[in-house]
Image (cartoon, rainbow, N blue to C red; front, top):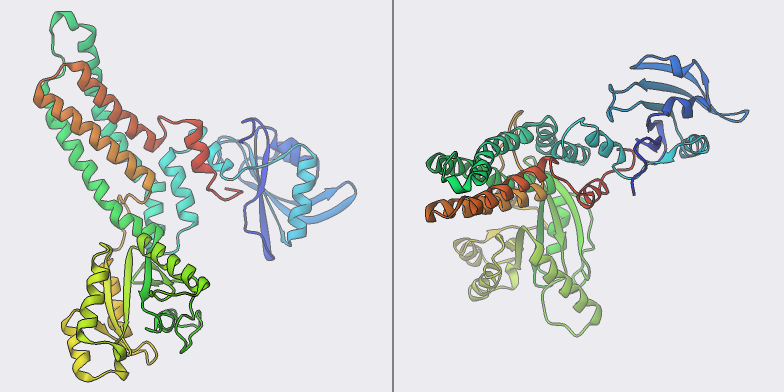
Length: 455
């Protein structure tokens, strides 16, 4: 539940834990009055914007810490409100005591994303740009950083606004026709409207197609390592991560739960997931692990299907490969323990599309990594590139495209203008949801609740 828009909110803007410095952020109409009550230094009420002031934060007569106070006067701040940032020493106790003193003097603890929500409501940027703030904070690759920066600077929003403005022009003409319905006039030429809708649909499809790469850039690739017990899944996980993450044992069924970690390959974040071996078992705990493996396979973006080449036959390789291919998820077949297998079987595995490796000896791991990257190769995101990375935006674009398709069908069928106007209005609605020109409290609450406290 967000606070009254005139209230002063406060929160730490830096992560919890010990650090050299910490930053505490405040925003609100009466922020100078609140901070002045516990700040000993220059008169903040007379301070000009974008200035820094040295002093102490006190609790009564007790000095909590010596600080630097940065002043931002409306509208020249992140929230476009009067704002203050307090730089203090990074002890959790110091941060807690300072925030406690500010709360006593009239501030309220900010909800997650409340600063960015105020910035959006005050017109600092639109909703798509606001969401990019969170994406930038959580960016783990350079591609993710650049995509978030491009969106935050309004590249994606500009595309959406342009599409919407063109539709609004024709929508207004159709609405005007409805007002003169009895006079049988046509203000919006149907051939021009059809050409416009086809053009907009083409642009929307291009944006939707970018989501495949955008989703990988933002969320990474969930890569499940799966196969029978003792095929070397945990050894492969450790080899890829270059650390002893999973327990390795000769005993089949050692891995009974999902183990995962992330690495970046060629600018793409891959989340490797080691799973319990796939087999029928009477062991209750292992059976739970096998069930979790099957659940992970349903959610995977890529599967590394691992077989123990030393214990396999050509027929066995073909049968296992067919079972994994049937799942519909992109799969790379990996023949492990090539160092223990017959050379003829290694060549047979290669001919069947398997990549032979030895996870224990780290043989051919570079070849495996190259194939993994090849499946999800993404061009480097450049300044100005428009890439859809947000599933909410993708869904809105999909619904827009469907509404425009209905409008096109209506034009071809020569239906009346009121039905065409209805479809065009729906398209405008979905485009407006992306940038926040059309919002609900539930939508905003859902978006900003996922932000950090202090942002």
